[in-house]
Image 1 (cartoon, rainbow, N blue to C red):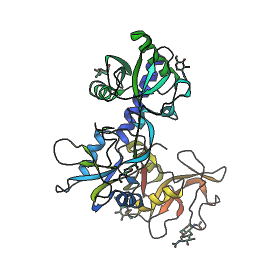
Image 2: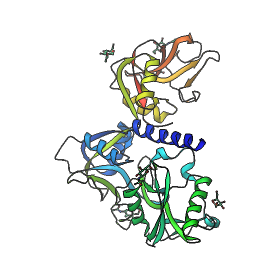
Image 3: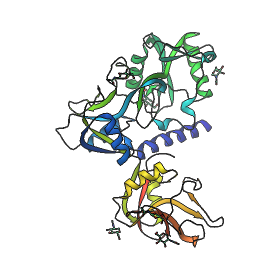
Image 4: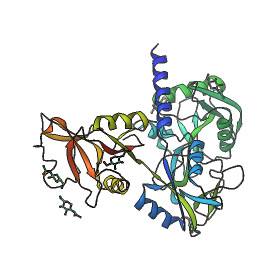
Length: 374
Ligand SMILES: *[C@@H]1O[C@H](CO)[C@@H](O)[C@H](O)[C@H]1NC(C)=O
Ligand SMILES: *[C@@H]1O[C@H](CO)[C@@H](O)[C@H](O)[C@H]1NC(C)=O
Ligand SMILES: *[C@@H]1O[C@H](CO)[C@@H](O)[C@H](O)[C@H]1NC(C)=O
Ligand SMILES: *[C@@H]1O[C@H](CO)[C@@H](O)[C@H](O)[C@H]1NC(C)=O
Ligand SMILES: *[C@@H]1O[C@H](CO)[C@@H](O)[C@H](O)[C@H]1NC(C)=O
Ligand SMILES: *[C@@H]1O[C@H](CO)[C@@H](O)[C@H](O)[C@H]1NC(C)=O
């Protein structure tokens, strides 16, 4: 019973997340090199596009309305150092520090070896050459099952196999899963080691997102000297391509913040964001304020609701994500905590001075929703 409830909870979490957390892509039809494109996106939106799934690619393609465009830069680029990643890169799959769970053999990570297997006898992890053939563990997200596969394959073929037949190679998020997977390996083959979904490479998203969605080309070009990634728009398969970062192409940015140009009360706006996106925006840093300032330029009302309200008894303002207000950017005389707080909420002005003001919650304003979990 407990197990069923837990599974239902997980499924709800995964599916509701993927349903509402589509990135909002913006095609920019200017030819810039990768670094210039990155700068442009960071100034005008949030960052160069990050891609979490095939659906994201489709969403991104819809924004490119110019048929003469052959390829667009996205945020994936090669860096100097390799980092560990899960093959199942969907951020919705992990909560808290789940994605950082590790269980190495005597803290011994080898210099060589970018793919990781588990020892069936003690559940410990070992990184070895990805080319070695080993049995492997797939994961099916809809049934929440681990599937043992034999005979062995090299890590990349195993990944391809799991993605085609199931969801992906198995991730290990905690001690329970470590134990479960160890038991499966042990039951099938005694002491031999089996691949699971951990690997390392030097590719990184511009926004440092953990997405490992690579559209099939992962790692194969690690010796390539072309360090930036574009998505090809010609042909039936929207494939990633590696290009020299100095080339100039159009590009795709994304926004974590969406301006909703409907005039709603603060409570209606909160409900709208929670039903259709994630939440009203909590502006907890100058960086978020900068993004908000870019977004509000297109508002049709003089002020735009933020996820900001007052705890009357305490006379303090707090964000809808539960945090109290540390970073602040109030207009003079506002946000002092002495306003008639019974029915006020916080808004950002959309004109030249984009500081915050307190307004009656019943005012009908545009508002900003977020597309990410805080
Ligand atoms: C790509 O990155 C590598 C490693 O950082 C560097 O040695 C190489 O010069 C870069 N290639 C180009 C074309 O910039
Ligand atoms: C995954 O599990 C679901 C539910 O049990 C099942 O219907 C589906 O066929 C499985 N998919 C694969 C590819 O095994
Ligand atoms: C992983 O699982 C193995 C086998 O059950 C256990 O011995 C080990 O302590 C676990 N490690 C951690 C860090 O949970
Ligand atoms: C919202 O209010 C503004 C200012 O009153 C008005 O210009 C705009 O047309 C309204 N928008 C909608 C969708 O009603
Ligand atoms: C905006 O308003 C604040 C406080 O009301 C003021 O200190 C600031 O100078 C103004 N900024 C601009 C650019 O007018
Ligand atoms: C809040 O700021 C606005 C815009 O600067 C100003 O018109 C208003 O008087 C301020 N409210 C208070 C209570 O000072």
